Length: 113
Length: 114
Image 1 (cartoon, chains in turn purple, yellow):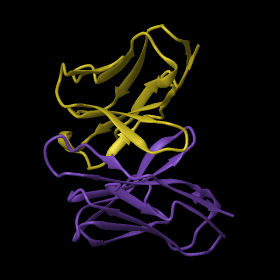
Image 2 (image 1 turned 90 degrees about the vertical axis):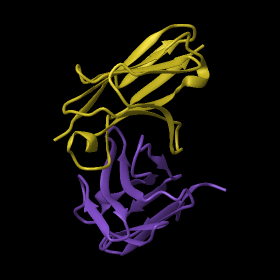
Image 3 (image 1 turned 45 degrees about the vertical axis):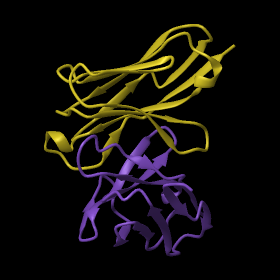
Image 4 (image 1 turned 30 degrees about the vertical axis):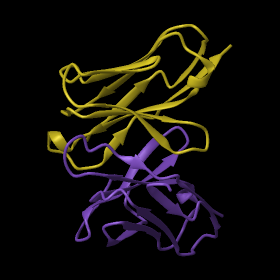
């Protein structure tokens, strides 16, 4: 079984709709992250969380919100989706100390029409 | 603000050749990561470089880190077609007093032709 899972894997929605992307992990890591990937731009950090009570904005948090429901679950919401939020979204996890290597989920491809 | 620059962004090379991808970053950090991404797939961790002078090798790939020059390199030796992918470097600014999370380069799209 995959250590980091994301649902849904693909989603097509319309402008103005509310969308939630979910991430679950079985790695026991305390830190979780949401990134978006756009062609030619690499990955950019949206939000990150050290634990259930500690959530922080990343580089491009406008238009997004998150919820850390448990250590293992971290959700990303688009309250009112717009076309320029069409992208590939990745969840990642890491331990708090040591190498802090991040492990990525399979990604969610979101299209906003 | 941390900036990470990779070059080249596109690289087409022949099997059997050697080449180097460069990753420069703009602020203090002693943690740098290399990832591989195949089309439509997630990111696979290749190397974790945690100190100045760190060198890691796996097969035909070797990565190094010079924190004083703020430069990492990913060297490909005797390239084979299976290494065709997009390669990303990413820097962790947290150790230098920055925010958590990784800052990525734009990626190097590598095509290796027979």
